[in-house]
Image (cartoon, rainbow, N blue to C red):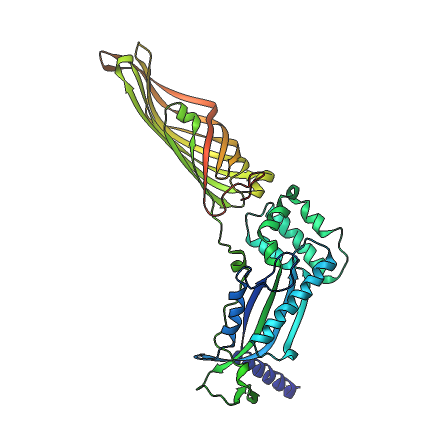
Length: 425
């Protein structure tokens, strides 16, 4: 029993050193095809540059490490539109088209090349959709694509046409967006080459070389050694995706009508939440008519966006929130010069409801009403002979509407724009 345990421990140690002594690295090259195309067009989507990468992979000058070629996988894929039979045929044509280019550019034994005819590439579409936050009803799309991909990989019959199921989300907006922005990336052939990195490269030699691998030796000819591998084409690179950023600048048009300049800013925090701040300032005076207007202050609110529109696009649609306000003011109206002044801060707090309506690619109208409590001290006075005569100090305690906005909102940030009907993003 003890002897068997020693043998098991020794095997574990040997396997551990084996794993440490060889690093697995990969190269990837992708070429794209025109709709319905099965032959590589060098003038399409910089395919010529992608194939030139094959020459780079083959070079062995100035390499820091030695790489032993293990396997080459070639995938032919298609976008979802069209019949299953047609897409399967296109996948095969695309994989074979790239195979011919690999045979021309690389000395890879056919015995280690594995060709995959994927057909409709639901799995990659799922990855692309998950990386693009602008996809309408993104989470619903990703969840459905997970199910469809699992069904396709298991070989089980689909529960209804998967294309129709995708088209049913967001009244077809999700499918239309994916078709415009991502289907072209699925009409592709992809080469993935896997290597073992087996050690530092010695002085270049044109003869066959003996490479130590796990205390054994293996004869390998020079074409199977490559230079530093080209960086794999990641899904983020395929989408050109960067993390989206949503913010907005805004002004309350109701305050502007009251001759009170104001500006606000709102930041999207994720999961439907945002934080918003507004500031206003006015200082107007006209002694001849006893008209005087001074006010400044602001509010801070935290919002939660709700509903279908909010899921499709942040900072859009219904929202509920809580807010706090602080302000001071000094008003004088009429020929008798009666005025009211709050020379200390008045405070308000409450709950708000609003709806942010898209009106242009980068513009929304945000309608907000808030109800809460307003409190603070204020003074009543009268102006006599250019003197301000104090009459009384009172305390305000008000429950009711304390906030009203019709704000013009300018959307700023990566991906922060509206998809207007009849227009492309």
